Amino acid sequence: VGPVPADFRVDLRNVRIADFLGAAGPEPATDGLLGGWVRIGGTARNPAMDARFTLGSFRYYDVRLDSIGADLGYRDRRLTALVRAVDGGRSIFFGSGTIPVDLSLADIEQRRLDEPLRFSLHADSVPAALPLSFFDAFRDVRGRMDGTLTLGGTTLRPTLGGEFTLRDGSAVWEAMGVRYRNVQGTFRVVNDS
Image 1 (cartoon, rainbow, N blue to C red):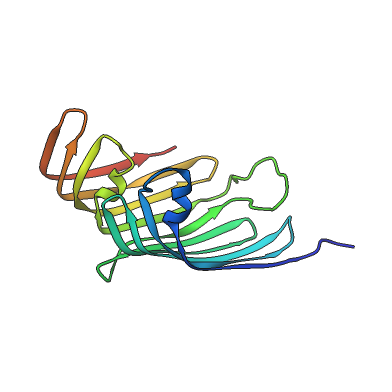
Image 2 (cartoon, rainbow, N blue to C red):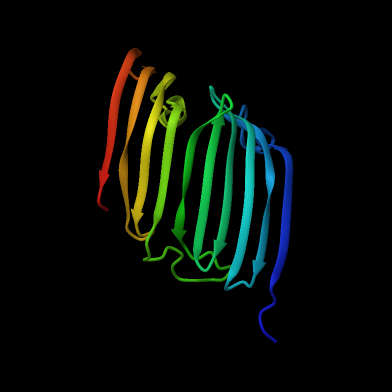
C-alpha cells in the first residue's frame, strides 16, 4: 500500500482577527475580517496546496486599508505567492514571486532550498505608518512611500535590492519628543548576501 493522498479544505468567512488576537492581551493593534480558503492535496512527502485569503477593513494601529489579499500555491517544492493591498479603491501594494521551500508534511533536515528565489514587492502610495509601525520609537507617522523591493539569491543565501521614496513624511520620535515634518527621502537597499 502506497501513500494515501490528502483531500482537505478549510473555508473562512468574516473571521474577525481582533477576536483571536484579543485572547493574547487587551486591545489588539490589528483588526479586520478574514475570508478565504485553503486546500491541501497530494501526499505527506509531496503535498499540493492552494489558498486564497482576503483581509477586509484592515486596521493596524492608525493605518486603515480597504483590503489585503493573497493567492498562494505550492507544488514541487515551490511556493508561488501573489499579495496585494487596496486603499481608497486602488491598488497601493503588489508583490509576486516564487520561493523554493520544502513544505512536505514530514520530518526533514532543511526546509530552505539552495535554489533561485525570485520575489518582488511594489509600493504605490503606501502609508508610511505601515512599515514604520514596527519601530516603537515613532508615533503619529504620516506620509506615503513608493518603490520596489526585490528578493533574489536563494532561500539559504537571500539577497535584497530596491529603492523606496518617502513623500510628505512626518512623525514624532518618542525618545526625544521631537516632531519631524516635511520629510522627503529615498532609501536604497543594496545587499549581496
